[in-house]
Image 1 (cartoon, helix red, strand yellow):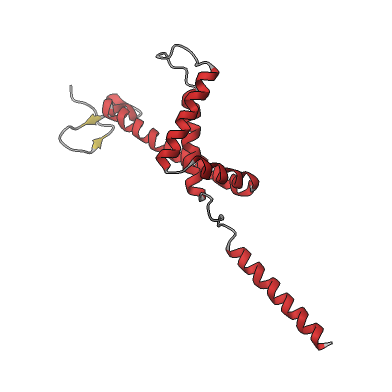
Image 2: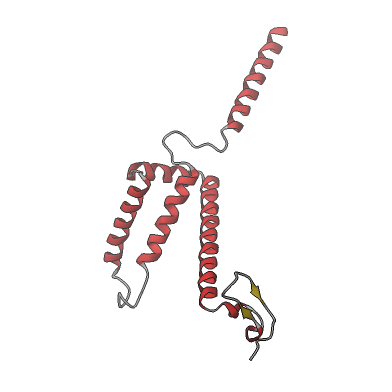
Length: 163
């Protein structure tokens, strides 16, 4: 009877240790698989390449034929993988891994959305800065009552101009 109890205790301890070890590796990816951050960066670039290939700008005169677009996108993908220093095989193996683990793939896509949102915020801030440089008074509710001094870097709003 004591022998059975000891065996059960040993099995319970081994199971507990395996559970603890598995919990510690919950965020890790196996050897040979790209980390989430690297996968995010590559997928963001690939999505931008896709969007660019669908661009119908006046310079192009119209949309590209699908066969030409596919060749162009493959070239973009090759350049993106070269830029990130990743082989096609490693990327595909990593993508298949994430595809077979939907929860991790979802995390990568959420990281992509956050990265794109941050990029958009930076772009918008730069656009506002350019607009301000072009017409600084435009940002005030009554721009005709705003004095902008060229001698100092502060703005004195709501002061009547002397005529």
